[in-house]
Image (tube, rainbow, N blue to C red):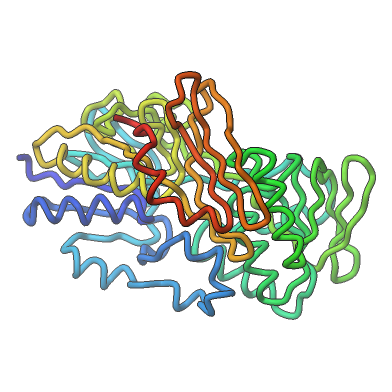
Length: 384
């Protein structure tokens, strides 16, 4: 093996998962992690239910960069940004002008929050929470506030809404879809979730689009496309994520929805890899925690000299909405099939089957979540 280090860009769950898996297989290989922020380790999914679980921004951070560096025996460089990737020279140029050579480069740069095209003098004051620093700002901004408006009724929007409602805030959730979790749940399941969250005090404004946000004294006025107006003390945007692909694109690495990789997590350049929220693996962008673990293990093995394709078994996602427990395994949008729905007041069991009757996805809500372990093995793998 060459003595050049493996360079990992990104210190989120994906970057750290690769570093850990690589260390299990190889204690000698030099590893350098470049982090645009403080570089400490924490679990990003904990941000959306930290109020109810009594966690502060400080207590969410598991270990700082210095501790992670000594634990994993890697070099971590916080507050270090990469300007460009030089594919032919197998090196990265940092914003401070320094050049670093690599044997293998791992892109674990995550995703950016999508921002809606809004007008008004308060657009810049709308917060998104995508990392611990954002969350710190969010918690700071919540002080002395009572009424919160959330743009987006997807996974993150619903989790934050439920968390804020438990903590005693009045919450409005605005979304263009007809029911919450529009991309993950069939209509009947979405309506069930909506009823449960409404019973917890959350007010939904669905099939609605905010156009304009302006300041009115200490509050914000949100004006909808159809003219309705609501006011709130604080506005949180949670309308989804877009893979961070600029660095790869500028370097001439092929990008589609995410940084495009094969089953080995390799880009077209066999020494450059991508995983996590920035990656499109065999056509799939899966912004969840479980795929990262599988990808990191396969990638570490490949980098260590044993080419290993990633396999994605069924990976159900738990939605952290205590008002309505949910576990969902969304079907691939390209599969033609239909939902079989069994609903009562205790819960909803929705199974997505293709024409041949094979199970491609499910949504279990309320009491039906107990069936997860029985149903999951019947699912087809996401990547066999």
